[in-house]
Length: 256
Ligand code: SAM
Image (cartoon, rainbow, N blue to C red; front, side, top):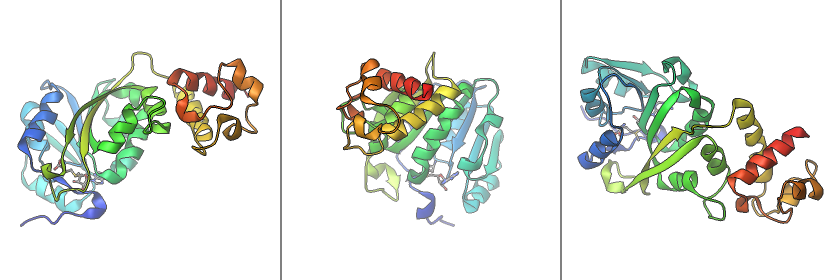
C-alpha cells in the first residue's frame, strides 16, 4: 500500500538516488560508526546507510512509517518511535562519537539545531538536509542579510560546512523551496555550557528588535560606556557585529 505523505510531519520523501548517494558518501562511514537517523520515513537514506553500517538507530514519529520499517526486519536497525525533540539524544551517544543524519522535516529544523548546541560534546558530526534558507542563516557572516541569532549561536559551537543545494524535484511530494545539505562538526574549542547559556541570553537581547541600534536593545542592561569599553559602537546594529564581538558582549553582560 502506498503511503500518503503527511504534511504535519513535514514529509517530503527523497526520490533522487544521486542526492541520496551524495549525502551518504559525504559521511565517509565506517562500519562501526554510531549513527542516528532522524525521520527515516520510507527508508530512502536508511537502507543505503545500513548497507555500510553494522548498526543504525532511527527515530521516527509516524507510526505508519514505523510499521513499514519494522516489517522489513532489517538486521542491525534499531527503531525508536518518538518525537525527536523529546528524545534525550545523549543516551545514544557512546563517548563523543554520535553521528547524526537526516532529511529533516522543515518544522523541526531550527529547534533541533538549537538542541544540538547542548549536546555538542557527545557529537562527532551532523549531516542534515534543511531549507536552503536555514543553511544560509547557519553560514552567514556579519553584515549579511541572513546573519542573526542562529548564525551566532551555531558558529560559536560548530564548524559549518554547506555541502550542496537540492532542488524541489528531488522529493516526492516536491516542496516549494530549495533545500541544502550541511555538515556541522563541533569546534576544537567550543563554548562551555554556561557560556552557551549566556550567549543565548545576549543574542536574544541584542537582536530583540533587528532595526534598533545596540544602544536601544541593550537599554537597561549595558550603557554606552560599557559598550565602548569592549570596543562596540552603541550606534551599531546587532547584525553588524562579528562573532568575537558577540562573545565580548556576552561576557560583559553576564558580569552584570
Ligand atoms: N528520510 C526520509 C527521506 O529522506 O525520504 C524522510 C524525510 S521527511 C522530510 C521527514 C521525516 O521525519 C518523515 O518521515 C517524518 O514522519 C519524520 N518526522 C517528522 N517530525 C518528526 C519528529 N518530531 N520526530 C521524529 N521524526 C519526525
